[in-house]
Length: 482
Ligand code: 5AD
Ligand code: SF4
Image 1 (cartoon, rainbow, N blue to C red):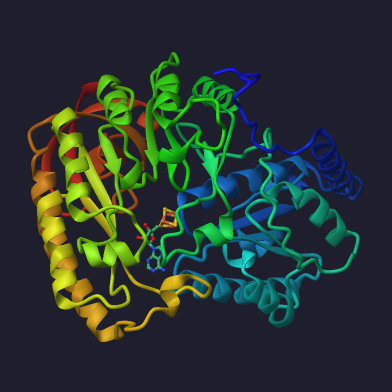
Image 2 (cartoon, rainbow, N blue to C red):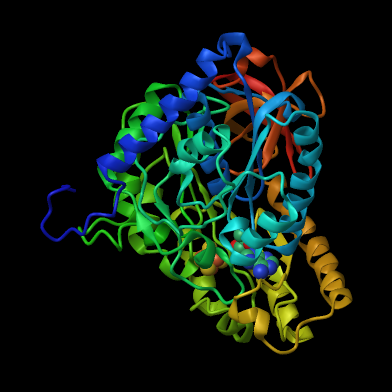
């Protein structure tokens, strides 16, 4: 994997000039705060509200990194913040409504303190009608920025602080910004983006329009970041991309996701690797082999099926059949018999008949997922499915949705029960949200495991014995430190 490989088409990265330009703006903002005596404990607060997927969480860490570089203190208290950033999601209408309602509530902070600056980023604002809506109906929002132009925050903020015009232009930027500062909430868990965008154009999905075409990061940049993360204490690293299996296709240098995974897993250190999301059509035998040969890669595969009906899959433009999908499941289970599988399902896609829905129920029975994220279809403006005939009435979708949950809950409980009596190596992640005498961690399976323990364990691997299973979690006791 050589940056100078003649076959390679290097991804378009930001030029040194563009990076330098943003550094200058960041220095100006930091200088403004410094001359106003706003440093140290007096540093202005920056509050970031994140909606949506892991990619958005990773993006918010970059926003927080840039804000810290500009002299802000990252805070969980929106009321005291001088800078409020909202990182939005557009995947379903509900996500957009929630974001708009939260942005609406932030008006009070701006009314109480005109110095407060509100900026809105993420997938929602990439759509012109939402950008226009924010410009015209939310006059207290100073600027918007799309997912590809997070690096321009210093420039946008500098202009806003100097009383410049409000900024509502969406550049649809697609160059990769390497080397942005990152502010992480925890050191033991880390996101690591390996690629951005999606080329699949599933007919229901807004992502290819909001995040643009697939762009892979250079392998050496990813490996360098992985090394840094491990050196700074990361024990659980999740490689992120809208479709990680496409990694490298645009680089033309012969690397692919399997080779990237193998190279990261070969790094020294006590850490484990996860990745998401994978498209079922692209799961290669090489990827399955790399996983099964390497214990640092967790025995978990998130493999969204979306529907069990071939007719619906075709209209979703998923490019696999239920049979082909199940062959991949079989190959995964053959190589790693105890692997945890999870999936995404859309209920009520246009034209979904009772028989189509029953095919999805059959898929749940056949695939035996540990966990399923299910969603009622939400038409997204500009996607082909939104124009399809036979949109399903909400009552029909909600009734199907409830039946699907009932079936999956039974499957999940049965799957979770397989762990009872076993000793599992978990990463202690946080104090349990419902019982402060307990610690919550995770093994390979994404299910939370609760066990009695003290906060000093957080960030360590611990061996626990599973004592009982619920539908959504497992209970355990410490079996001795790993
Ligand atoms: N409506 C409902 N669910 C959707 N998803 C993506 N687009 C839509 C939509 N328009 C779901 C898919 C995807 C997950 C991240 O969100 O299941 O895998
Ligand atoms: Fe959306 Fe399909 Fe791309 Fe996933 S693979 S982000 S569902 S278009």
